[in-house]
Image 1 (cartoon, rainbow, N blue to C red):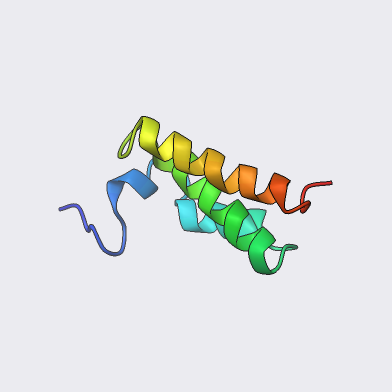
Image 2 (cartoon, rainbow, N blue to C red):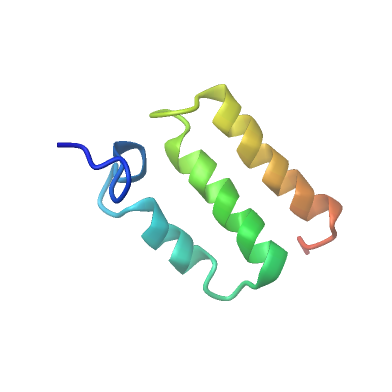
Length: 73
């Protein structure tokens, strides 16, 4: 049975869950940097299984936000 709350299939494909990848990827980030990076990863992770082009656009939005805010060096 697919647990849509704790382990939804669109976040559990592959060897690790998305949340674990996000925790590792944002370990040295704080605030908006961490939030935007985590959300971009989330949408890139699940785009094929859930939101399609809309999820890709959402990931781009978070990346563009970081670029516009001057957070990316």
